[in-house]
Amino acid sequence: MHFKLEATDLQSSARAATITTDHGIIETPIFMPVGTVGTVKGVHQRELREDINPDIILGNTYHLYLRPQTPVLEKAGGLHKFMNWDRNILTDSGGYQVYSLSANRKIKEEGVKFKSHIDGSYHVFTPENVMEIQRTIGADIIMAFDECTPYPCEYNYAKRSMHMTHRWLDRCIKHLEKTPLKYDYGQTFFPIVQGSTYKDLRRQSAEYIASVGAEGNAIGGLSVGEPADEMYEMTAVVTEILPKEKPRYLMGVGTPVNILENIALGIDMFDCVMPTRNGRNGMLFTSEGIINIKNKKWEADLSVIDPMGITWVDTEYSKAYLRHLFTVNEMLGRQIATIHNLGFYLWLVREARKHILAGDFTEWKNGMVKKLDQRL
Ligand code: GUN
Image (cartoon, rainbow, N blue to C red; front, side):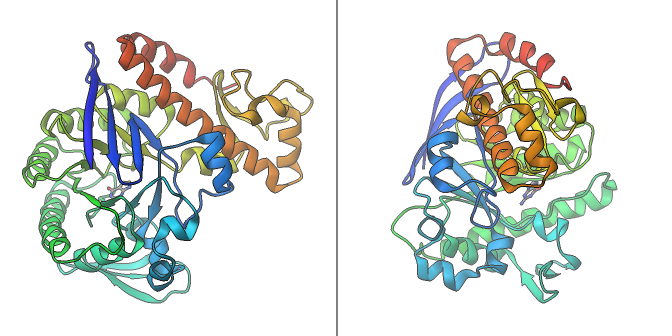
């Protein structure tokens, strides 16, 4: 993997860069659509490539390990081939899903024993087996196995958990060194900063994570219910410490405004279920503000979904038609909303990149932030 810094904003810490892997170039800042279980829900690969056009998408170790399971992925030659996606993929380690989805999990130094949310069967994730699973899934960027602490989190728990995440990181690195690549392209490993909402812990964690010298670094444990200002404070503390010459990935964030504010703090990569999940529930992020398309207000509004027209669905369907599809529970409604929202998120980060390169990011960002939170 190669990271090239192209421009840094003068009034903020925003940066524009490129990340090059064996599956192509990722222009940053980037938003990675979430493809949890080998599909970006509701969007087929042709639409994803041609209409939304992200350089990278996300997959989840937890879900892919449970279904279709690693032997099938190995037989297919990895997730890229299995799902017909020849651009970049990043897999999360399961360090978040284990805590958010499975019941009866038991966290120990050795690893996490958890109960599948699908059939109730018991499984164990350790730093070692999660590295092997990610080798088999075959994403371009793979993540350390960590514990994502909840919010709020008591100081002593956050501290103990952070130290365990650091020890797990050492085990991940050691095990990766002796686990060969499965396919004919490289994989890059990113460690994850934790430390809840405590500045001293965040500093300590960022210093530890920076010290292992990985090719890129991530920040976890945020966007778990804390106020936005607290999230920004933590990002700012951590980006001060993480090396400038390596990509920084803020996991699971967030709203369009969260993304712009964190770009200003020096984040390069984002992922979030919000555009896809909220889209399936009828929430649209548009150039004019946020729309709940299920609202009666749109019943006879024949204006287009978004006059800015980022993706073709924006100008080929009316608000009234899309509302109708949601009212009668047709799957096309969820598909249109998903394409629109992902198109919007990708547009937003591409615009941010353009303005960083042009040197007027901060002014543009401040104007956008005022508009994006408006509810129509
Ligand atoms: N996704 C969102 N937050 C986190 C986190 O803290 N850890 C991991 N592994 N994934 C995440």
